[in-house]
Length: 450
Image (cartoon, rainbow, N blue to C red; front, side):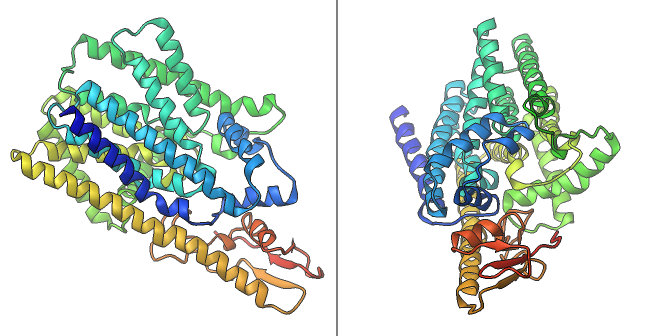
């Protein structure tokens, strides 16, 4: 059995590589990628200033190291490849975590399907498809290592300290990825060995203590670190403790967005209500243990915490990993409780395959192809103009061009974004300018586009 599981895990890793092959085999850049390209082409590099201002110094360091290896947009594929390798490592570690703790008992197929589904969910696929997100996978690995240390039966003080350090490092790369720490806690509580006893309660208390300390450190990195190095904090670090406003946002905007991000479809509001209601009812029937049920619901709601307390209340696929992962776990857990085991396995496999290939298809059609098409259209427009001075009016350029558009990430035209187009034009050998009197250049008429 163990040998067969290892072979299946090898197959899962191969499947991940195949599903992510489009992000490796294509040359393209998107939105913020062009800012990096522009800095490199003009030799005006910013060594992590923005990342420090947003409370992610380790992310800034990792991104800055890439400056030494990038000449133009064709080099970005190497870093997307690094991300895919890191994601395969995370998938394997996730599988080992589920297997070692026997969370799903004899239903070993879930140990394979859950990591694969989460690793091909829209947030992680976006991270892999977008160069500037390539360090985020390290945040996931650090968070998993942190939880392994925090939840060990031999949880000594040194282990707790190292757990805190790993989780702080995870937050220093990407705050929302670090919060996946809560998912591992939820999975542990679903495990066949955990019955809500004193050992389980002690583990929960220790984990929340570690998470609380790490979140305070993350807040300090966002609020205090910028001023210590002579920078100013951004609006993204502003907090909003308006409880009723946050709850309203959570129900009206948050819940529908995360469900649409999971299935990558424009689901109606009524369908959103039906799906969440069914999930809550079926989960209550399947879990049976009332304390665990309410703990899972609490952890799911708490997974929105970074968005709930942030004043911007900005919804983006790249920051929706934890809520989506909870939805995936809930769905698999409900399916696993079906009385017919064969039927349960078949439905689980169908759900996994559907999510994996549909996500890959949507990103290939509405992210990679759209991004390449956008650059090709801009290139043709610049080359076909015989005049020395070419005008690009951002206001007139269609912002969304994909068949499926969500947030500011999928189906978006980079050449309609003010901070992206200078890098795109310099890649084409043209010098952008804001002056209408400029000669031998491309004039950009900058207007508010959102």
